Amino acid sequence: MKRSTFVKLSVTAVIAALFAAYVLSFKRAVRSMLEKDSSQLDLKDPNTIDVFMNDADKEDYWRQFSTAKKMFICVQHFFYSLGVHLPLYPKYLQYRSVITGQFLLSTSLFMDAANTSVSYTRFYNQYKQPCSNPFSSNFYPETA
Image (cartoon, rainbow, N blue to C red):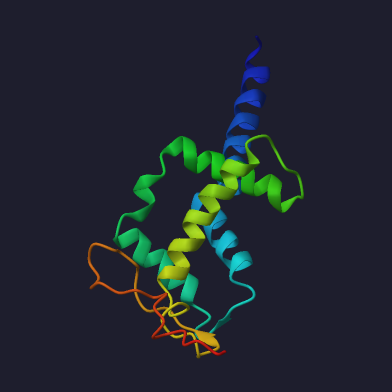
């Protein structure tokens, strides 16, 4: 192989790696998922998702996703945003639901049913919060 060919291939590989790292950013994919999934909610603070992402980093929440799972989520989300459903799409929906569910549990959506706007309370950790039943009849009285 000639030296010029090697340099061209090396530069191309570096550019491709940088592009892949930019496109396949896990936190950007998660932020995009949360923005799409919470678009129907009336969020009080526009920085709610940013605060959630920072709190998730502090709680080391993303540790439950291995590097392979993170890359899987990124690739699936990239093609999902293009309208393409790859194989193992239901697994992607499962991971997406886990992340979105954690976000929704961290808001006041379930605790204050009468309020139409949703605010971020704190990162939901079932081991650090007092016992509660958000689906209790105290919050949702019967209207018969």
